[in-house]
Structures are given as C-alpha cells and as structure tokens.
Length: 583
Image (cartoon, rainbow, N blue to C red; front, side, top):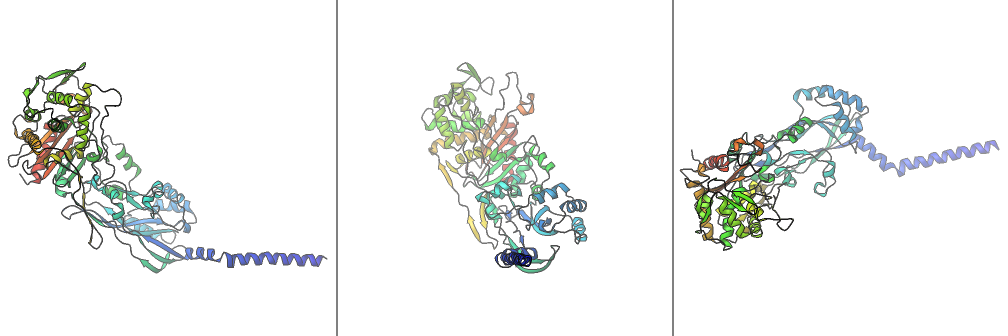
C-alpha cells in the first residue's frame, strides 16, 4: 500500500515537472528567447544632427558638433550605489543625479544619458576604468552650437530634454525620454523640420554589456536647414545699440513683412542650454530682475503712447470728424470730467492743425479729437492696424497685448482721453508698433511678419519658400495717408519735431516718438531723472526710410528711457545709418 502511494507521488511530481517544462520550452519560449536576445543583442539609437540655421546671406547661426556623452544601460548595472559613487569620482557629475536618472527608467535596456559633452580628460578616465564600470558607455552625439553666442538668442531659441508631460502629447509622438527638443524660438516653432530622423546600430554585447560585434547599422537622417530673413550684421548692430539697456529693437522691410533684425535686451547664451544648464544657472536666469529669457519684441507689452496718435489722426479724417486744416487750441491743460488733463508742453502749443499736432505731439489736440471719435471708434481703428492683436509672426509665445472694453464696468470721458494718446489699459508689443508704421509706409497694407524665408532638405532641395502674406488692406484714402506721412516726415525734418534727433542729412526719415507712462508723476517732477529708475516712462520711436520710397522700418523701445525723442530716436537713427551704409 505504501509502495502504491509512493508511486503515485512520484508520478504526480513528474507530471507537474513535465507541465512546467512544456510551459517553459514551448508556451513561453518566445518570451525567454526575446529576453535572451535582448541580453545579447542591443539596438542603440543614434541621434540625427539637427538642421542648421542660416541668416539671409548664408551665414551659419546654429549648427552641430560632436559631443562625447556618458550613458548608462540600467539592465547591466548590479550595484547602482557603488557605480554612482565611482562615476562622481571620475567625472563632474553628482552621485545623486546618477541615481535619480536610474530611478526614472522604465525600460532597463534603454540608454540613460547622465552627462553631456565630456572633456578629453573625463573620456580618458572613463575609458581607463571601462572594465570595472558595468553598464557604462560613451556615445558620440550631435551637440547644438550657436557660433555667435547671445546674438539673436531670442529668435533662435533654446533646446532642452523633453518632459514627461510633453511625451504624453500628440505633438511629440515617436519621441523618447532623454530626447532633446526645441523649447522656444525658431528651435521650437520649426521642431518637426529641424529634428531629423534617428538612426541606430544593432550590436552584440558580452555578459558585461560591452559591444563585441556590429550586426547592422541604420544611418540617421539630418534635419532640414532653415534660411532666415535676419541680416546677421544688422542684428549685431541692433544688439550693440541696446547694450546695457532693457528694451527691444525690431526692423522690417515694409514692402513684404520680412524681419531684418529682432533684438531684445538683456539676452542670454543659448549654448548654455545645449550643454545642459545647471540648476544654479537656471535659477540665475529666471530670477534675474530684468527677465533675460523674455523676447521683448513679441512678449513685452507697453502702452503705445503717442505712437497711437498716428492712428487717431487717420481715423478722424476717414470718419469725417476732422479736416487736416482745422485748428485746435492747446493751452497746456484742459478739464475733462472732474480731472485736469495736461499736455507734455506745460505752456501749451497754441493753435495747431493736424500737421503741427503730429510734429510736436500735442496731447490736448488728440484729447479733443479722441473725445469726438469716442472709445468704440478708437478701438475699432486700433484693431484695424493690428494693435493689441497677434501679428502671426512665425515664433511661439507671442502676446497679443491689451485692448480695453468700454462696455465692461464704468467708462468715463477721461478714459477716452487717455486712450486717445495711447495710455490707460491699452498695451502693444514692439512688433505690433512696427507693423503699424510699416503699413503706413507701404500705403496701407498690413503684412504678416515672418522670419523663415526658406526650408531646404539635407540634399539642398527646397521644401518651402515663404511668400508675403497680406493680413489686411486698411480702408484709407491715399490722399489722407499722404497728409499723415508728410507730418511723420516733419517729426524728424522739422526743427520743432519731437524726433528731430533722428535727422540724417543723406536720407529722409519719417517717424513718431512716444512715451509709455509707467506711473502718473506728481506735477512737481519736471525731468524723468528725478524719478526712481523703475518709475520712469518707457521711450518709443517708430520710423521708416527713405521717406519717399520706404524699404526699411524700425521700432525702438527703451524701458524706463523717459522721452522717446531723447532715448529711442538716437538708436533708430544709428540703425538706419548702418543699414544704408551712411557714415
């Protein structure tokens, strides 16, 4: 009886073992074969070099160079703590960073980059200890380089590792953790064209994860090259003029909307981001009181100030509430409601017509004209000229500005008066102000500004070439435009013009000064210098040249510069002289 029980027990054990063997060798064989193959065979992705970026004359503004990167294969690491400690002794990388990177891993066979751009000495130390460093390798990858450093940094943008949140979006389908993407500027806007297509190589590895044989290789395909409308020399000149000031300079060809220069100050070096910015460097940038990462040309919003008087003048003529010859008296101040509104010229301008009101920027004249028009018409015309609205420029992060809504809450006559000279809850970007002046220069066409002129594939074939895009044709009579254009010439040519400092002997310039109020200064304050720096007004000058056949338009905004005629106009004059080769 005992023998029978023992026999049945043996048979049962044998049956269980047979079933388990069947499961391992037949049912689960593909699974274990895959695990075995993955331990022995590896596919190593090879990043594609990003497309290059050129200026309008073919000069390289963004390119790539080889970088030696330290990568880890988690599946080959038996003692992460020991490895992290050893790596921190060999290269400039914190032990905590190595461990944090390993903790983030979802697929243990995927490589994890822990440090970019190793120095020659660091590479030598790693290779010298290669046998004891399990799961460690050095990969050669393309590193983004900006040869001119801070030049056009806000236009070109920055790169950074893709975030978990971005990986979950449709826009980044096919990307992997650790991939580098454009985070701002041209790099972000044109990411699908610039990124290229990854390649890779399949290799056989030994028990320690070291490559012993190349099985097959797929070469990466480089990204497309971009050709910008920017002129590198003009860009550098604009940035040089802004040096030490917070502000913006943006220049355009008014005949088609192409941007020739786009400078924002203060700036930053995008190379810092390519190499992998440290927490300390990042904190220094984001906590900087002057916000160097902000592209003030499209993200800075300011009251347009007296620049808006040009729109008010054209609107008043077109709406039939004013003739250019009508004279309005300015005595230096006027009562509106229960408030006193003053002109910038304390004793007043006397009796002025439209020409003289624009040339000398008479506030009282425009208070009275604005009150006749009313807030609805003022805002209707502001929108017609693209103020307070997105321009559509081919850069991410553009701000639209602020347009008030008189129908919400209480609106008084004083609010209309303030709006008439570009003050109150009304803000625009420098690019919007430039587009306004460019539309007057070209006879009433509002173009969509653009920076990328052409996209070429890696073989040099043209994939895309930008054509001028008209946003709107302004409903203006040419004779009315000519009246205002003559006044804009007078702003610079007339000896009493507020922009007289922009006068150039060799070329006729037309423009408009502006002052964007920061605070309502007490009456006793006579000069901007008497106010603390951060309370001083912002200075505007928007211009075009040559006045008779405009081919160049520029907007200058100097934060806390005070008077547009004194702070902004001289910068515009120097940029115009530079562009036209005038010494």
